[in-house]
Length: 314
View 1 (spheres, rainbow, N blue to C red):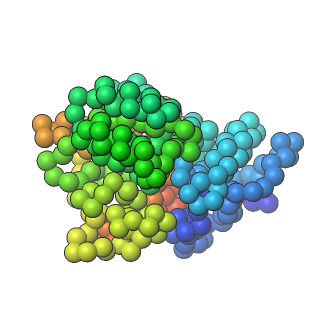
View 2: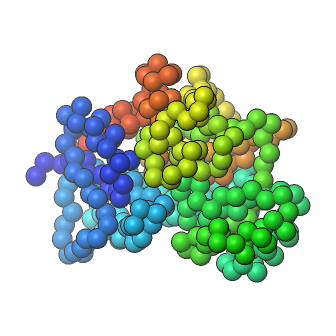
C-alpha cells in the first residue's frame, strides 16, 4: 500500500476538520481512532506519516486508557523507523504539566510558581506556601480541568470538603501562583511544523475552561462549542503578532521533536509574560480565522504540512 497520513486520536469531533482539509487537498489518510484495540508488536507498521493527536482529557469522553495505548503505539512506530509527528516525547508533555513546567525552565521560558501535591492534606500544605491568590489545576488535564481560583486557604478548605472537588485522573493536583493580568485575556501561540503560525487572544472573563476548538464537550459557556456566546468573540486572531518568546518556544519544539503545539501565556501588570501550558493536541477556532480574513487557517496549514511530509517520504 502506498504511504498515507495516519491520524492517531480519540475525538472524532475534533479531528473532523482536519480530515476535511486533507480530503480537500486529495491527501490519502487513515483514521486511527484509539480506544479499545490490539497492538501486535511483531507486526510491521504501514508506511506513511503518523500524526499523534491524543488528548490528556480523553478520560472525560470515556477513553480512560487511550493515552497509555497510544504511548505503546508511538513506541512501536518509532522503533520501526516510521515518521511520527508528535511522538512519545510530545505525549509525555501532553500528559504532565509538571513535565511542561520543567521543560519550559530548561529553555529559559518563565512559568508561574507551581507545587504538585497528592492528597488533600498535602494540597493544603502547598497552598499555605503561596504568598497570594493561587489556582488549582489537574496535572493531567486538558480543557482547563480542575482550574479554580482561590484568594485564601480557607476557601480551598471549603472546596476540598465539598462535592465540587475532583481529583486529577493521575492523582496529582497542582497549586500554582495566580498571575493577575490587567485585562482578562490570555494569548495562545500556534506552531505548525515547529514554526509559529499565528496567535489568538482569548477572553477569560467568563471562566478558565477554555478550548479553542469549534466543538468541545465541556458543557461550559467559556468553551466555544457554540462559537459566539453572548456579545463578545472569545477568540480573536492577533494581526502581525510578534513576541520575544517565539524563538525560545521554537527551539524547544525542535529539540523535543514536537511538530504541532499551542502554547499559552499570560502577562502581568508589569508586562512580564508567564507561560503555563503546552498543548500538543492543538485545535483551532474557525470563527476567529474567518473574522481575520480566512487566510490563516490552522487545519489548512496543518494539512499542507502533513502533505509535505508525506511527499518527502515518496
